[in-house]
Amino acid sequence: MGKSSLVNRLAGRRVAVVEEHRGVTRDRKSVEVEWRGVTFDLVDTGGWLAQGDALEAKVSEQAERAIASADHVLLVVDVATGLMEEDRQAARWALRSGRPVSLVVNKVDDVVHESSGWEFLSLGAGDPHFVSALHGRGAGDLLDHLVDSLQEVTEETEIDVNDGALRVAIVGRPNVGKSTLFNKLIGEERSVVHDMPGTTRDAVDTVVETDSGPIRFIDTAGMRRRAKTEAGLETYAVLRSLDALDRADIAVLVIDATVGATGQDQRLAERIAAAGCPAIVVLNKWELVATDDRPNVLATVGDKLAFLGDAPVLKTTATSGKGVHRLLPALQESAADYVKRVPTGALNRAIRDLQIKQPAPTGKIRYAVQGAIEPPTFTLFVAGRLPATYLRYVERSLRERFELGSTPLRVRIRVD
Ligand code: GDP
Image (cartoon, rainbow, N blue to C red; front, side, top):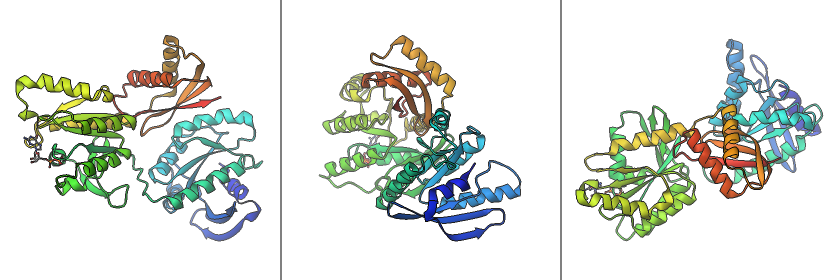
Protein backbone atom coordinates (compact mmCIF):
# COMPACT_ATOMS: atom_id res chain seq x y z
CA MET A 1 0.00 0.00 0.00
CA GLY A 2 3.04 2.23 0.21
CA LYS A 3 2.51 3.36 3.77
CA SER A 4 6.19 3.33 4.62
CA SER A 5 7.10 5.51 1.69
CA LEU A 6 4.24 7.81 2.66
CA VAL A 7 5.59 8.06 6.19
CA ASN A 8 9.01 8.89 4.81
CA ARG A 9 7.52 11.44 2.51
CA LEU A 10 5.51 13.12 5.25
CA ALA A 11 8.46 13.07 7.61
CA GLY A 12 10.67 14.52 4.88
CA ARG A 13 14.04 15.71 6.01
CA ARG A 14 12.71 16.47 9.43
CA VAL A 15 12.62 12.79 10.17
CA ALA A 16 14.15 11.62 13.38
CA VAL A 17 13.50 8.09 14.38
CA VAL A 18 12.63 8.45 18.03
CA GLU A 19 11.43 4.98 18.60
CA GLU A 20 11.71 1.76 16.78
CA HIS A 21 9.84 -1.25 18.01
CA ARG A 22 10.91 -4.55 16.63
CA GLY A 23 7.58 -6.29 16.70
CA VAL A 24 7.08 -10.00 16.39
CA THR A 25 6.15 -9.54 12.79
CA ARG A 26 6.96 -6.20 11.31
CA ASP A 27 8.30 -2.95 12.52
CA ARG A 28 5.92 -0.51 14.03
CA LYS A 29 7.86 2.64 13.51
CA SER A 30 7.18 5.93 15.09
CA VAL A 31 8.80 9.01 13.65
CA GLU A 32 8.66 12.54 14.88
CA VAL A 33 7.32 15.00 12.35
CA GLU A 34 7.32 18.74 12.56
CA TRP A 35 5.12 20.85 10.32
CA ARG A 36 4.28 24.55 10.68
CA GLY A 37 5.73 24.52 14.16
CA VAL A 38 3.61 21.59 15.33
CA THR A 39 5.37 18.41 16.33
CA PHE A 40 3.66 15.04 16.37
CA ASP A 41 4.52 11.36 16.19
CA LEU A 42 3.62 9.51 13.07
CA VAL A 43 3.18 5.79 13.67
CA ASP A 44 3.53 3.42 10.78
CA THR A 45 1.62 0.23 11.35
CA GLY A 46 1.98 -3.01 9.49
CA GLY A 47 -1.52 -2.51 8.15
CA TRP A 48 -4.85 -3.99 8.83
CA LEU A 49 -5.76 -7.31 7.31
CA ALA A 50 -9.30 -8.55 7.05
CA GLN A 51 -8.49 -12.15 7.75
CA GLY A 52 -5.59 -14.48 7.60
CA ASP A 53 -3.22 -16.53 9.67
CA ALA A 54 -1.94 -15.88 13.14
CA LEU A 55 0.91 -13.76 11.84
CA GLU A 56 -1.45 -11.46 10.01
CA ALA A 57 -3.76 -11.25 13.00
CA LYS A 58 -0.78 -9.98 15.01
CA VAL A 59 -0.17 -7.28 12.45
CA SER A 60 -3.80 -6.21 12.64
CA GLU A 61 -3.63 -6.21 16.40
CA GLN A 62 -0.71 -3.82 16.26
CA ALA A 63 -2.63 -1.51 13.99
CA GLU A 64 -5.58 -1.64 16.35
CA ARG A 65 -3.36 -0.80 19.29
CA ALA A 66 -1.81 2.07 17.38
CA ILE A 67 -5.28 3.41 16.57
CA ALA A 68 -6.35 3.16 20.18
CA SER A 69 -3.52 5.40 21.29
CA ALA A 70 -3.71 7.82 18.37
CA ASP A 71 -5.13 11.33 18.20
CA HIS A 72 -5.79 11.01 14.50
CA VAL A 73 -5.92 8.09 12.12
CA LEU A 74 -4.74 8.20 8.52
CA LEU A 75 -6.54 5.54 6.57
CA VAL A 76 -4.28 4.86 3.62
CA VAL A 77 -5.72 3.25 0.50
CA ASP A 78 -4.22 2.56 -2.87
CA VAL A 79 -5.75 4.00 -6.02
CA ALA A 80 -3.89 1.43 -8.10
CA THR A 81 -5.62 -1.57 -6.51
CA GLY A 82 -8.95 0.21 -6.08
CA LEU A 83 -11.36 -0.34 -3.22
CA MET A 84 -10.72 -3.63 -1.42
CA GLU A 85 -12.81 -5.42 1.17
CA GLU A 86 -9.90 -4.91 3.55
CA ASP A 87 -10.22 -1.16 3.11
CA ARG A 88 -13.84 -1.40 4.17
CA GLN A 89 -12.97 -3.39 7.26
CA ALA A 90 -10.11 -1.10 8.15
CA ALA A 91 -12.37 1.93 7.65
CA ARG A 92 -15.04 0.42 9.87
CA TRP A 93 -12.47 -0.29 12.52
CA ALA A 94 -10.90 3.15 12.32
CA LEU A 95 -14.25 4.95 12.40
CA ARG A 96 -15.45 2.89 15.32
CA SER A 97 -12.47 4.05 17.34
CA GLY A 98 -14.08 7.47 17.63
CA ARG A 99 -10.79 9.08 16.57
CA PRO A 100 -10.84 11.57 13.74
CA VAL A 101 -10.04 9.70 10.54
CA SER A 102 -8.60 11.10 7.32
CA LEU A 103 -8.82 9.15 4.13
CA VAL A 104 -5.54 9.20 2.22
CA VAL A 105 -5.60 7.89 -1.32
CA ASN A 106 -2.04 7.06 -2.29
CA LYS A 107 -0.38 6.64 -5.68
CA VAL A 108 -2.36 9.47 -7.19
CA ASP A 109 0.60 10.56 -9.25
CA ASP A 110 -1.33 13.00 -11.38
CA VAL A 111 -4.74 14.59 -11.71
CA VAL A 112 -5.89 11.82 -14.06
CA HIS A 113 -5.78 9.31 -11.22
CA GLU A 114 -7.98 11.48 -9.02
CA SER A 115 -11.20 10.50 -10.72
CA SER A 116 -10.74 6.85 -9.81
CA GLY A 117 -10.00 7.92 -6.24
CA TRP A 118 -13.53 9.13 -5.59
CA GLU A 119 -14.83 5.60 -5.24
CA PHE A 120 -13.21 5.54 -1.80
CA LEU A 121 -15.81 8.08 -0.64
CA SER A 122 -18.06 5.14 0.00
CA LEU A 123 -15.79 4.15 2.91
CA GLY A 124 -17.50 6.88 4.86
CA ALA A 125 -14.19 8.26 6.06
CA GLY A 126 -14.76 11.69 4.57
CA ASP A 127 -13.33 13.34 1.50
CA PRO A 128 -10.20 11.73 0.12
CA HIS A 129 -6.82 13.40 0.31
CA PHE A 130 -4.99 12.52 -2.86
CA VAL A 131 -1.27 11.99 -2.46
CA SER A 132 1.61 10.42 -4.23
CA ALA A 133 4.20 9.21 -1.78
CA LEU A 134 6.53 8.69 -4.67
CA HIS A 135 6.35 12.16 -6.14
CA GLY A 136 5.35 14.06 -3.03
CA ARG A 137 2.16 15.28 -4.64
CA GLY A 138 -0.44 16.39 -2.07
CA ALA A 139 1.87 15.77 0.92
CA GLY A 140 1.91 19.43 1.98
CA ASP A 141 -1.87 19.71 1.86
CA LEU A 142 -2.26 16.54 3.87
CA LEU A 143 0.18 17.81 6.52
CA ASP A 144 -1.72 21.12 6.66
CA HIS A 145 -4.96 19.30 7.19
CA LEU A 146 -3.45 17.00 9.80
CA VAL A 147 -1.91 19.81 11.79
CA ASP A 148 -5.19 21.79 11.71
CA SER A 149 -7.06 18.79 12.93
CA LEU A 150 -4.57 17.98 15.68
CA GLN A 151 -4.84 21.53 16.94
CA GLU A 152 -8.59 21.23 16.97
CA VAL A 153 -8.36 18.08 19.04
CA THR A 154 -6.30 19.73 21.71
CA GLU A 155 -8.76 22.65 21.84
CA GLU A 156 -11.75 20.35 21.97
CA THR A 157 -13.51 20.41 25.32
CA GLU A 158 -16.27 17.95 24.60
CA ILE A 159 -15.74 14.23 24.52
CA ASP A 160 -16.34 12.91 21.07
CA VAL A 161 -18.69 9.98 21.21
CA ASN A 162 -18.93 8.23 17.90
CA ASP A 163 -20.05 4.74 18.73
CA GLY A 164 -22.48 4.41 15.85
CA ALA A 165 -25.45 4.54 18.17
CA LEU A 166 -28.53 6.45 17.18
CA ARG A 167 -28.69 9.38 19.57
CA VAL A 168 -32.13 10.12 20.91
CA ALA A 169 -33.23 13.14 22.93
CA ILE A 170 -36.45 12.91 24.90
CA VAL A 171 -37.64 16.47 25.19
CA GLY A 172 -40.64 18.32 26.46
CA ARG A 173 -41.90 20.59 29.19
CA PRO A 174 -41.69 19.53 32.85
CA ASN A 175 -44.38 17.16 34.13
CA VAL A 176 -45.54 15.95 30.75
CA GLY A 177 -44.34 12.48 31.78
CA LYS A 178 -40.86 12.19 30.25
CA SER A 179 -39.35 10.35 33.23
CA THR A 180 -42.31 8.03 33.61
CA LEU A 181 -42.20 7.25 29.92
CA PHE A 182 -38.47 6.70 29.81
CA ASN A 183 -38.41 4.39 32.82
CA LYS A 184 -41.31 2.42 31.43
CA LEU A 185 -39.52 2.15 28.14
CA ILE A 186 -36.26 0.79 29.51
CA GLY A 187 -38.06 -1.25 32.17
CA GLU A 188 -40.02 -3.14 29.56
CA GLU A 189 -37.09 -3.56 27.27
CA ARG A 190 -35.45 -6.88 28.00
CA SER A 191 -32.21 -6.02 26.23
CA VAL A 192 -29.14 -4.60 27.88
CA VAL A 193 -29.31 -1.10 29.25
CA HIS A 194 -26.30 0.76 30.57
CA ASP A 195 -25.37 4.26 31.58
CA MET A 196 -22.47 5.94 29.83
CA PRO A 197 -20.70 9.22 30.38
CA GLY A 198 -22.40 11.74 28.14
CA THR A 199 -20.97 13.90 25.45
CA THR A 200 -20.59 16.79 27.84
CA ARG A 201 -18.74 16.43 31.08
CA ASP A 202 -21.59 16.29 33.58
CA ALA A 203 -24.15 14.48 31.45
CA VAL A 204 -25.09 10.84 31.66
CA ASP A 205 -26.54 9.02 28.68
CA THR A 206 -28.33 5.68 28.70
CA VAL A 207 -27.52 3.17 26.01
CA VAL A 208 -30.09 0.50 25.14
CA GLU A 209 -28.87 -2.40 23.04
CA THR A 210 -31.60 -3.32 20.59
CA ASP A 211 -31.72 -5.84 17.76
CA SER A 212 -31.06 -3.10 15.25
CA GLY A 213 -28.15 -1.66 17.15
CA PRO A 214 -27.54 0.51 20.16
CA ILE A 215 -29.72 3.52 20.89
CA ARG A 216 -28.21 6.22 23.05
CA PHE A 217 -30.63 8.34 25.07
CA ILE A 218 -29.00 11.67 25.73
CA ASP A 219 -28.77 13.31 29.12
CA THR A 220 -30.95 10.94 31.07
CA ALA A 221 -29.61 11.51 34.57
CA GLY A 222 -32.63 13.60 35.55
CA MET A 223 -35.02 11.00 34.21
CA ARG A 224 -33.29 8.02 35.78
CA ARG A 225 -33.04 9.63 39.18
CA ARG A 226 -36.58 10.87 38.89
CA ALA A 227 -35.16 14.17 40.03
CA LYS A 228 -37.96 16.64 39.99
CA THR A 229 -37.63 19.92 38.24
CA GLU A 230 -38.52 22.62 40.71
CA ALA A 231 -41.52 24.77 39.95
CA GLY A 232 -40.58 27.87 37.99
CA LEU A 233 -37.70 26.15 36.31
CA GLU A 234 -39.56 25.50 33.10
CA THR A 235 -37.21 27.68 31.10
CA TYR A 236 -34.23 25.84 32.50
CA ALA A 237 -35.76 22.48 31.58
CA VAL A 238 -36.44 23.68 28.06
CA LEU A 239 -32.88 24.98 27.74
CA ARG A 240 -31.60 21.59 28.81
CA SER A 241 -33.84 20.01 26.19
CA LEU A 242 -32.43 22.33 23.55
CA ASP A 243 -28.93 21.33 24.53
CA ALA A 244 -29.79 17.64 24.23
CA LEU A 245 -31.35 18.31 20.84
CA ASP A 246 -28.12 19.74 19.53
CA ARG A 247 -26.49 16.38 20.11
CA ALA A 248 -29.36 14.19 18.95
CA ASP A 249 -30.09 12.38 15.73
CA ILE A 250 -33.74 12.01 16.52
CA ALA A 251 -36.03 13.73 18.96
CA VAL A 252 -38.91 12.36 20.96
CA LEU A 253 -41.15 15.30 21.76
CA VAL A 254 -43.41 14.45 24.66
CA ILE A 255 -46.60 16.50 25.03
CA ASP A 256 -49.22 16.44 27.73
CA ALA A 257 -52.33 15.47 25.78
CA THR A 258 -54.62 17.07 28.37
CA VAL A 259 -52.96 20.43 27.75
CA GLY A 260 -52.17 20.12 24.04
CA ALA A 261 -49.25 21.75 22.29
CA THR A 262 -48.28 24.93 24.12
CA GLY A 263 -46.10 27.82 22.97
CA GLN A 264 -43.10 26.11 24.57
CA ASP A 265 -43.87 22.90 22.67
CA GLN A 266 -44.03 24.91 19.47
CA ARG A 267 -40.67 26.47 20.21
CA LEU A 268 -39.22 23.02 20.77
CA ALA A 269 -40.78 21.73 17.56
CA GLU A 270 -39.31 24.65 15.63
CA ARG A 271 -35.91 23.93 17.10
CA ILE A 272 -36.21 20.26 16.17
CA ALA A 273 -37.15 21.16 12.62
CA ALA A 274 -34.34 23.72 12.38
CA ALA A 275 -31.82 21.14 13.57
CA GLY A 276 -32.92 18.88 10.71
CA CYS A 277 -33.62 16.28 13.32
CA PRO A 278 -36.54 13.93 12.65
CA ALA A 279 -39.02 13.61 15.45
CA ILE A 280 -41.48 11.27 17.01
CA VAL A 281 -44.32 13.05 18.79
CA VAL A 282 -45.70 11.38 21.90
CA LEU A 283 -49.08 12.50 23.24
CA ASN A 284 -48.89 11.32 26.82
CA LYS A 285 -51.61 11.10 29.50
CA TRP A 286 -53.82 10.05 26.63
CA GLU A 287 -56.18 8.16 28.96
CA LEU A 288 -57.20 11.46 30.52
CA VAL A 289 -58.52 12.79 27.22
CA ALA A 290 -62.22 12.05 26.78
CA THR A 291 -62.94 9.86 23.78
CA ASP A 292 -65.02 12.58 22.15
CA ASP A 293 -62.20 15.09 22.43
CA ARG A 294 -59.54 12.84 20.95
CA PRO A 295 -59.94 13.71 17.26
CA ASN A 296 -59.91 17.37 18.17
CA VAL A 297 -56.74 17.05 20.28
CA LEU A 298 -54.99 15.22 17.44
CA ALA A 299 -55.99 17.80 14.87
CA THR A 300 -54.97 20.75 17.02
CA VAL A 301 -51.60 19.23 17.84
CA GLY A 302 -51.05 18.48 14.14
CA ASP A 303 -51.76 22.11 13.25
CA LYS A 304 -49.60 23.57 15.97
CA LEU A 305 -46.67 21.32 15.20
CA ALA A 306 -46.91 21.61 11.44
CA PHE A 307 -43.13 22.21 11.27
CA LEU A 308 -42.59 18.59 12.08
CA GLY A 309 -44.12 17.42 8.82
CA ASP A 310 -44.83 13.72 8.78
CA ALA A 311 -43.47 12.89 12.21
CA PRO A 312 -45.19 9.82 13.60
CA VAL A 313 -47.56 10.57 16.48
CA LEU A 314 -47.88 8.02 19.29
CA LYS A 315 -50.50 8.08 22.02
CA THR A 316 -49.35 6.81 25.39
CA THR A 317 -50.26 6.43 29.02
CA ALA A 318 -46.83 6.29 30.57
CA THR A 319 -48.11 5.47 34.05
CA SER A 320 -49.75 2.22 32.96
CA GLY A 321 -47.41 1.68 30.03
CA LYS A 322 -50.18 1.68 27.46
CA GLY A 323 -48.86 2.51 24.00
CA VAL A 324 -45.26 2.77 25.23
CA HIS A 325 -44.30 -0.44 23.43
CA ARG A 326 -44.66 1.39 20.11
CA LEU A 327 -41.91 3.86 20.85
CA LEU A 328 -38.94 1.55 20.66
CA PRO A 329 -39.94 -0.01 17.32
CA ALA A 330 -40.43 3.50 15.94
CA LEU A 331 -36.93 4.40 17.13
CA GLN A 332 -35.51 1.09 15.92
CA GLU A 333 -36.91 1.76 12.51
CA SER A 334 -35.11 5.06 12.51
CA ALA A 335 -31.98 3.34 13.80
CA ALA A 336 -32.09 0.79 10.98
CA ASP A 337 -32.56 3.52 8.38
CA TYR A 338 -29.75 5.46 10.00
CA VAL A 339 -27.19 2.83 8.94
CA LYS A 340 -28.75 2.03 5.58
CA ARG A 341 -26.41 1.90 2.61
CA VAL A 342 -27.78 2.45 -0.88
CA PRO A 343 -25.85 0.69 -3.67
CA THR A 344 -24.20 3.17 -6.03
CA GLY A 345 -25.99 1.80 -9.11
CA ALA A 346 -29.44 2.09 -7.56
CA LEU A 347 -28.61 5.54 -6.24
CA ASN A 348 -27.59 6.79 -9.66
CA ARG A 349 -30.69 5.34 -11.27
CA ALA A 350 -32.74 7.24 -8.71
CA ILE A 351 -30.81 10.43 -9.45
CA ARG A 352 -31.40 9.98 -13.17
CA ASP A 353 -35.12 9.38 -12.69
CA LEU A 354 -35.70 12.26 -10.36
CA GLN A 355 -33.95 14.60 -12.80
CA ILE A 356 -36.10 13.36 -15.67
CA LYS A 357 -39.19 13.96 -13.57
CA GLN A 358 -38.10 17.41 -12.52
CA PRO A 359 -34.88 18.82 -13.99
CA ALA A 360 -32.94 21.37 -11.95
CA PRO A 361 -33.25 24.86 -13.45
CA THR A 362 -29.59 25.80 -13.39
CA GLY A 363 -27.55 22.65 -13.06
CA LYS A 364 -27.26 18.94 -13.47
CA ILE A 365 -26.33 16.14 -11.12
CA ARG A 366 -23.80 14.03 -12.95
CA TYR A 367 -23.58 11.27 -10.44
CA ALA A 368 -23.89 10.56 -6.76
CA VAL A 369 -22.32 8.39 -4.13
CA GLN A 370 -23.33 7.60 -0.60
CA GLY A 371 -20.27 8.77 1.25
CA ALA A 372 -21.37 7.79 4.72
CA ILE A 373 -23.93 6.17 6.95
CA GLU A 374 -24.96 7.32 10.42
CA PRO A 375 -26.79 9.25 8.97
CA PRO A 376 -26.99 8.33 5.30
CA THR A 377 -24.98 11.04 3.56
CA PHE A 378 -25.11 11.52 -0.17
CA THR A 379 -22.61 13.49 -2.21
CA LEU A 380 -23.89 14.86 -5.48
CA PHE A 381 -21.39 15.72 -8.18
CA VAL A 382 -22.92 18.69 -9.87
CA ALA A 383 -22.29 20.73 -12.99
CA GLY A 384 -23.69 24.21 -12.52
CA ARG A 385 -25.71 25.14 -9.47
CA LEU A 386 -28.53 23.55 -7.50
CA PRO A 387 -30.96 25.76 -5.59
CA ALA A 388 -31.80 24.78 -2.01
CA THR A 389 -35.36 23.91 -3.01
CA TYR A 390 -34.03 21.41 -5.50
CA LEU A 391 -31.81 19.85 -2.86
CA ARG A 392 -34.87 19.35 -0.70
CA TYR A 393 -36.58 17.75 -3.67
CA VAL A 394 -33.61 15.38 -4.09
CA GLU A 395 -33.64 14.58 -0.41
CA ARG A 396 -37.38 13.89 -0.43
CA SER A 397 -37.13 11.70 -3.52
CA LEU A 398 -34.25 9.63 -2.13
CA ARG A 399 -36.03 9.28 1.20
CA GLU A 400 -39.11 7.92 -0.55
CA ARG A 401 -37.38 5.70 -3.05
CA PHE A 402 -35.08 4.04 -0.56
CA GLU A 403 -37.62 4.02 2.25
CA LEU A 404 -35.43 5.98 4.60
CA GLY A 405 -38.38 6.84 6.82
CA SER A 406 -37.84 9.72 9.17
CA THR A 407 -34.12 9.18 9.71
CA PRO A 408 -31.94 12.25 9.14
CA LEU A 409 -30.25 12.48 5.75
CA ARG A 410 -27.43 14.66 4.53
CA VAL A 411 -27.09 15.73 0.95
CA ARG A 412 -23.83 17.38 -0.01
CA ILE A 413 -22.82 18.99 -3.24
CA ARG A 414 -19.51 18.86 -4.99
CA VAL A 415 -19.19 21.11 -7.98
CA ASP A 416 -17.04 19.67 -10.71
P1 GDP B 1 -41.39 14.86 33.50
O1 GDP B 1 -41.17 16.08 34.34
O2 GDP B 1 -41.74 15.23 32.09
O3 GDP B 1 -40.27 13.89 33.57
O4 GDP B 1 -42.72 14.17 34.07
P2 GDP B 1 -42.89 12.92 35.08
O5 GDP B 1 -42.55 11.67 34.39
O6 GDP B 1 -42.17 13.22 36.33
O7 GDP B 1 -44.44 12.95 35.30
C1 GDP B 1 -45.12 14.06 35.90
C2 GDP B 1 -46.40 13.58 36.56
O8 GDP B 1 -47.30 13.10 35.55
C3 GDP B 1 -46.19 12.44 37.51
O9 GDP B 1 -47.02 12.63 38.62
C4 GDP B 1 -46.62 11.21 36.72
O10 GDP B 1 -47.11 10.16 37.53
C5 GDP B 1 -47.72 11.78 35.86
N1 GDP B 1 -47.87 11.05 34.59
C6 GDP B 1 -46.90 10.68 33.72
N2 GDP B 1 -47.44 10.02 32.67
C7 GDP B 1 -48.77 9.99 32.87
C8 GDP B 1 -49.87 9.44 32.11
O11 GDP B 1 -49.73 8.87 31.03
N3 GDP B 1 -51.12 9.62 32.66
C9 GDP B 1 -51.32 10.25 33.82
N4 GDP B 1 -52.57 10.38 34.26
N5 GDP B 1 -50.31 10.77 34.55
C10 GDP B 1 -49.06 10.64 34.09
